[in-house]
Length: 139
Image (cartoon, rainbow, N blue to C red; front, side, top):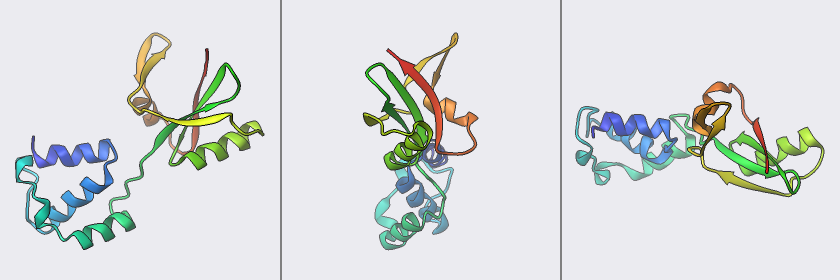
């Protein structure tokens, strides 16, 4: 695997720390995008600079999550949000009550939507703003 592929995956899977380390090592010309991933050596990085980059989020990576909020014994709503608190706030604003619980779900969880199989990761491509209600489930 090339560093270019790993760097791309960092954005795809929202791995902020690794992305910032690779970005720093690229800026310092200690690696190139065409290098094999085995050449990635974190000992060459200035850890203080990378920590500052992560704190200020130079690359703008925000980890979007999907939360399952229990409405009652049978019904659940799924919400895309940056945090559990943000998901609960949207739920309370929309439904005017507190959820029974709130759990983070996997973005790669696949389910049927109509006749197609889709994951939450694929679904979020269709949303422009967050937080957002993305679906309901009844058991």
